[in-house]
Image 1: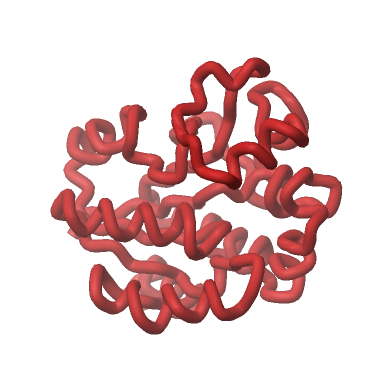
Image 2: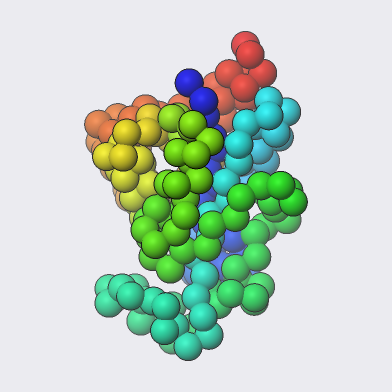
Length: 197
């Protein structure tokens, strides 16, 4: 089965202590869980195996005219001038920065398939299995896995490259939701599989 690795929202705004979301505790949890180090291992393994890699980020115009959601969390993003394209927050963390030949998807919502070319690109490449991880577990990772399942892809969530603002949110998705829409794996298992082991 042709596969791709999707790294979801591993951008400075979320994973760096100076990020406008990361500064409120998420970056600390990312560090404690080893998310970036594990994601780098997965990225290296995918590249070594010639697997397609997609980097997804949240990014808006400075006036947020491209933001459709009216959810309460959006007010916080706007008030903090977070996730504006071209600024520090929308750049990928250096540990997991895209290579020149890897696809970058910029989304304006939780689901990276919505209003982007991601699904068309995956279908053109004949990709059926989607390995994924990122932050936050209960938002972009859950949304991506659910949509991937609905669209006929086989989602595989790499648990140790995911993090959420609190353990309960992360654990609920990993134990209750992910097994219903796909499978759950680890960095170690992904690396071994990518290396043909």
